[in-house]
Length: 113
Image (cartoon, rainbow, N blue to C red):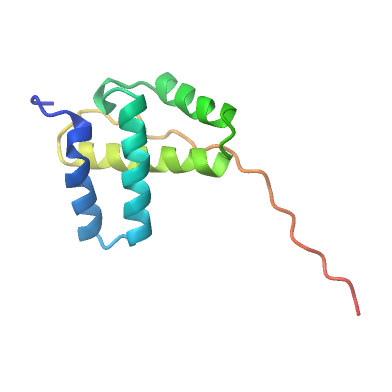
């Protein structure tokens, strides 16, 4: 990547998300999760799957739910896909990385009246 750090392109990514008409809530979430990722991880072009899995496991150990951990994964997947599509990184470390399994929610059973 020619001297530009990937996380410096976060605002360009968010503009692209606005262009694609993603919801304001999605934009806010992407911004928050990517800011936290930038503080805790290196550049996306330097990451490997083990770094990302270790980060997600740390979040789970800190008490975050699998749903919250999946938000990090989704935000980074979207960001890395954008970086690759725009030619800022050659390979997307997030391609094919699965989400955390979510516990099944039981549906309430209705009793006959």
